[in-house]
Image 1 (spheres, helix red, strand yellow):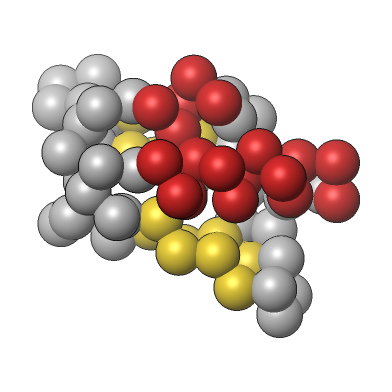
Image 2 (cartoon, rainbow, N blue to C red; image 1 turned 120 degrees about the vertical axis):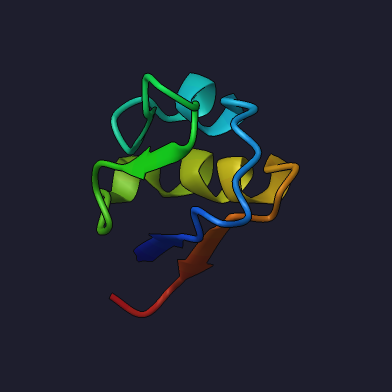
Amino acid sequence: MKVTVDEDKCCGAGTCVLLAPAVFDQRDDDGIVILLDSQPSAELHAVVREAASVCPGAAIAVSEDA
């Protein structure tokens, strides 16, 4: 799995951080997403897919090709 984020689309809702804090964080000044792990381990794949699907800004992209 390969994860990418588009900071320009991020609205700072923080849902991704709540779901997968090992993969996502937020900048302190504006809440924009920070990608901590672009290739998360297999046990995190389901929650990362969920974070991408519920992202209100559609800022998270998941590719199954590592």
